[in-house]
Length: 195
Image (cartoon, rainbow, N blue to C red):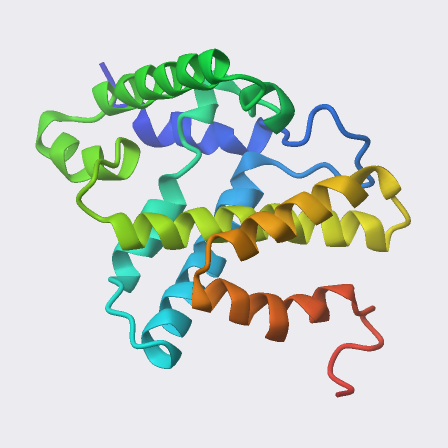
């Protein structure tokens, strides 16, 4: 049997996010994952350079790259459904875990242990996971900013909720990103670079 892991991962480009919301532009899990990689890298660098952190930047980037890989088999569960009640949330965690295990099974034996902590992160990298969680929320917030910039008010409540969720993390690098970098996402192409 051919090793299918990477071919299956590539299917993330077909999985749409924000299924319950009207979108001006569809975002895929593949696109979102790349943005989370970029943001996790930035947050890790900010945390270390400006706030005295000791975050492993490479681990942040790798965790970010695979953070939504289980959605290949589960799809992107809308947040209002996923977090509606504790029973649904716990059941979804179990489904995600089974999905990650299914992905791991597609790897050859000599690679499985290298990918296990990326697909099934435990407690061993708490600060790196915190950075990735913040990057994930920032990516969703950026989507809201972009949609609202196109006149789509559908994302107004989500924007407020996500911005508050990022602030509630009390992560200096994320607060820095909100203050210094997020405003530029509201600029038009003509406005970028004129500051």
